[in-house]
Structure formats: C-alpha cells, structure tokens
Length: 252
Image (cartoon, rainbow, N blue to C red; front, side, top):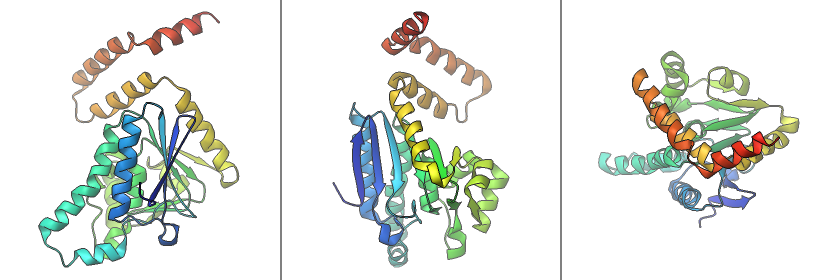
C-alpha cells in the first residue's frame, strides 16, 4: 500500500488520509492508485461500515499536482485521456460502493480536491474550510468533476463556480449544497466522530439500499422513481437488520 494515502480501520470506520501535506495533498498518479486501492478494500472488507476521507496537515486537498499537469502538456491527447479516465475511475467507484463515504474537510478543498469532496456522500466541513474550482484561472477546465458539480449545485451556481473559479467559505458552500454540515473549528473533530460513529452503528443493509437507490434516481422519470422505491421498500423488509431493529423497537 502506498504512503500517498494512509488507511486505518477502527470501529467500522476506515479513515483514508491523503498524505502529501508538504504539497497540500495534491493529487498525483501514485495517490490516485492508492485511493483506488483503499476504495477496493472498503468495498470488499465486511468490517468496513463507513469511509472517512481527510487530508494530512492543514488542508484537505489543493487539487491535481501542477508539475504532473504541466508535464501532460507534452503528451498526446490519447495519453492524456487515459490519465483523465484513471482519475475519473475514483469518482465512479466512490458512487458504486454501497457504503457511505464522508469527506472530512479542513483547510482548502480546491479544484480536483473539491471534486473529491463533492464525490463523497456527506461533506463535513470546519467553519474555516475553503472550497472552489479555480481551474479556469490556470487555463484549465474542471471537466471530470463538472458532472458532480452540476448535479449537486444546479446549473446557475455550477456554471458560476466553474467559470469564475471563485472560492467559497464553508457556510456559503453549505448554502449552495456543496457541504452537508459545518462545525466550529473548536469542536470539529468531536462532531465528526459523532457522525462517523452513528453511521458505523447503523444497519449496513439499510445504508446500502439507501445509497444505491439515491443515485439510481438520477435521470429517472417520477413514476419510475416511485416504482424503484417500492422495489427497494419490498426487499428491505426481508433483511435480518429490518426484523431485528423492528423487534427491538417494539419491545421498548
């Protein structure tokens, strides 16, 4: 396992820490490889109930490694497409894994780093955190993450962020739908731990059904979404988790 991403499992919580603090946790090819390996572990290991993604040092992630990006200017379009698809695979796998993935954001989450946070199912941010997609200011495009950004924030807000590259504070990012919850810096870790423990203690099957249905609703007609809900409702009633939880509640 690469030291680009440190992985630690405790109490059902797999913490994946981006580990290039001297580079503001900039994403390079070895980090992408390490992220994919951690996601595979999260998917296959039954002891993992929830994944927490965070950054070492003072920042979550400042985006792609600029030296690696600059070197790509001398490569062919096909070579660059393969590199882009390799990074894109991280987002696809995050969506497919049936376990909740939580971004724990302190400091800056910018460009591809902001996309990585947006790809998570929940984004917990410290009050002092910063978010943004400043690629256009570097002559680049937030192309891979634009699908996530548009679905999360809507057309007008997403275009504003992609075209201007403006940086948001955590509270404004929450108001635009990019952040789930904002906590004061002073008790950020305590609040994050509480959320992660609650997710780890929840029914794995119920969480898996919830995540899978949630993203399958993308693009469905209203009637088809309701039918999908009925199917999930019916199957979820047959799980051992459902029976045990309901029986325990009725005994109170």
